[in-house]
Image 1 (tube, rainbow, N blue to C red):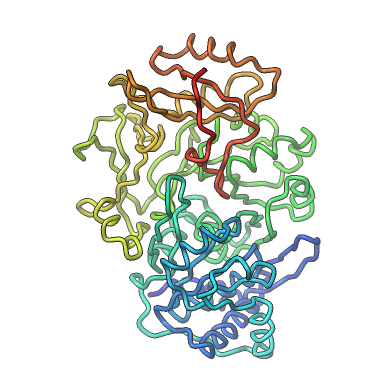
Image 2 (cartoon, rainbow, N blue to C red):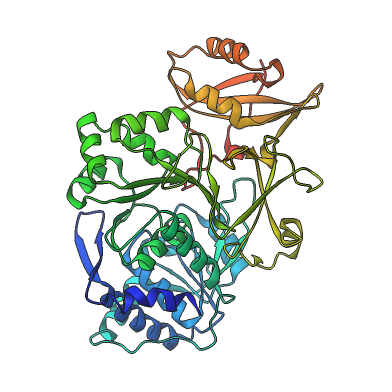
Length: 496
């Protein structure tokens, strides 16, 4: 069965039920039933056929959040077309890399951004496509579903965030999205009674793979907004009264700016806050629980694997950990020889399950490096407790080896985040003639924070080889759209 067979439970089975409200940047609200989305996606599929798009073709979009993305996603599912989402923060160089690599039939965007697209790729105006599809959707357009679609059928080509270099396209299938959605709906007990406030970008698997599919598979109601805006958040929560919210580190930090009374009111209608894409510092978790009355559920996933691990919905949500493997996913922690390590010992996480992608687009070299005997090498370093909870310690590529000692940046970053006046911190390794590498810390803080005092406190709490050789004050850490720190974009450090 393709993913579409699972989504029909909502699209057809709940056709008359209210499904979606969309609020654009100007505050205008448009509403849809599940039947509307079924009809509109069928009409859009007809328009794509008329433009020569068929099974196996790639079709890219470069758009801010809007219902059209959902209609396009459903239309492509029905036709066996491979969707290529492009981050709306990307500019010419980054877009050109994806377009040249994926070779889509066209990129769907708006007139305001058409100039950013490579001239050799076809540009389709989203307004024109919407107008043509709307004209064809006057009645209940017959359903379209290509024969032979199954769990192995490629469904999306999603490019990694490129935190260290040129991004690679992960080939995600109908089965990947189905397994991921079903696992999350079960693990987080999402039902048709939930109300999901969707603020995450739909060009990313966090918003599209997790949010959209949890919504469609459960048949709940969703409010979609163009982008997260912290000054509008209180109004959204008050007027919509969601029960479910998926966010990232920066969103939760901004939500903590709400007055205590507002935070408590928001928490009263909520059932579950989920966070991912970057670890939440313990002080943020504690402050959020105190103000909103909810312990944020942290989970762990990747573009290539969707969701792997989650703190339990019922049970202990242990601060600093990502929790336990989800029901359909197996996790190993191994040493450099890919041998399992005992609990309490650091190693690389390997994962296996129906959520893991088929591989990378036209990158057999990357496949050979990432897949070992059926297991996917995540590149993330972690440790498992005796009772199974997993704690991430950083990326293998972030590991600093200084004078023969291993240093994991996250340990230093968490300490720095606990110190007064420091909003955020990132630690990287820089070359050193004597020790090979030494850590350097970049801290977001005001001028009232004395870096010498910070260094003294770190020296008091950590082994000497872990103490950063330098502390650099920055206004903000460079991050991807989903909150991951782009360490390679930090300014160079020069010792005094």
